Image (cartoon, rainbow, N blue to C red; front, side, top):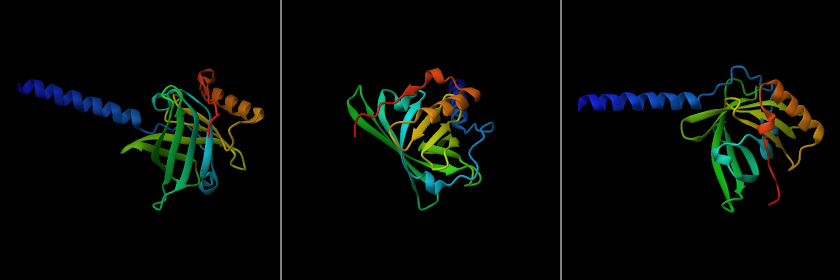
Length: 179
């Protein structure tokens, strides 16, 4: 009987370690934007494209809103319309800088102590369009202050992503047809 509990405990510990590792911020090879101005980044962004993953599955009209929290972290509100369930969904989280606030390398959590990488790797000087990588090459977002991204910026972001090892053929291009 004690042996079963020992194996169960060891199994639970191993699974917990794997889960924690999978949530760790793996951004050592990412070169995030330097001289980043978080104040200019705050506000509403439209998700133009992303890789598919569970939270945003079957979602269009996705947006992210960023606001400064009193403790210096950034409040994140992600919102989207699930076209299969015909309803809006949202999630609130927070982002914290990893190191200097002048480098756009952050970690974001929507689930308590579990954080994932959020690295802004390209942004225009007016903070209107941004390319973001997550903790691994499984996560990428193209964001804009408007529901459409101009073709020159789109091509530049795609070229950078391909150069950095992302399969841009897997991108889901988000529709923005609801308010």
